[in-house]
Each structure stands twice: as structure tokens, then as C-alpha cells.
Image (cartoon, rainbow, N blue to C red):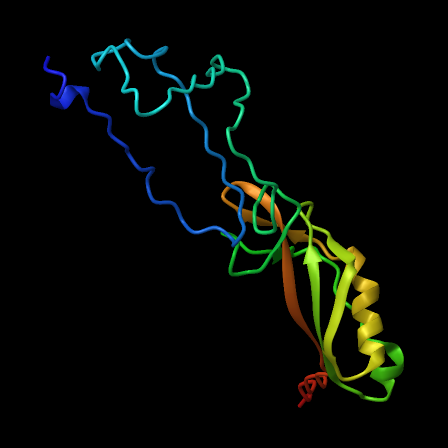
Length: 190
């Protein structure tokens, strides 16, 4: 084959497009050697004197852990790290279990016929439990309702969020409404 033939040219093949990850994400580049040194394969047997030749990294044996050429530290937004995701970032969001506990209506507010609500934010971990240390009240109509939600939170059960097949922690915003429904009128006997 001639030295300037099509088979003797090097080509760069870019990787396929991937979905965008969080800003500052970690990316690893790994180089492998297909054949040892210059002179192997159909290319020219000598290198130009204008550029220096650097020995390529030794490729790992199949089945061993790869060594990355360039590695950045993990950042928020990656499933591998201990990150918290929003509902927009997960593939399947947190769902409250049917058998989960619910806040009890505070008796003092029930007897006074006080109704209200609590808007809260908290993190649900990968085991389906709410992280009580992350509990934050966004809006509440009465402190008694906040206590009821805070007391019930450790007993609430959820199906954890997922990105792909990996379970991840998710930030949840939930509204708890405390409403008194009058009992239905009993049918009168004729």
C-alpha cells in the first residue's frame, strides 16, 4: 500500500452524543493500546522527526479494573455520589407507600374545629425512609399541624426514586391538608 493511501491515515471517531449531566460533572477518559509501538499494523514504519513519540499506557488485562488517564473528583449531580436529586432529575420519582403512616389530626385543633395545612420539604433516601434531619417547613397555618407532620415523618414509607436502575435520594415537597369533613346525614327511618 502507498504511504499516503487511505488505509494508512489516522481517524478520530468522536464518542456518541450523551445526555447532558450536571455542571462540573466527572468524566473519565481512557486510552488503550491496540498494537504495540510504531511499525505495527498497516501504517508507516517510521515516525516524523517533527513530533515526539510518547510510549502509550499499558492497557489493563480483560476483567481487571481500568485505570483512567484523567479523573476528576465526583460532584453533585451524579448517581455515584451521595447526591440529592429533584423530581425533574430522576427517571422515576418517590411514591408514598399505601401502608405508610400519615399525620394524625391534633386533638386540640380537632375539638376547636381548626383546619389548615403544612407545606414541607424533606429528603427520601434510597431505603424509602424520610430523612428527618432534612425536614423543612415551607408554609404552615398552625404549629400544631407542623408537630403532627414532624411526628409522623419517621413512620412514613416510600418507594425510593431511581435514575436508571440505581436508587437515589430525592428532595420531596409535599402538602399536608388537615380538613374536617362533617359526617354524612344518617338516612331517616319512615
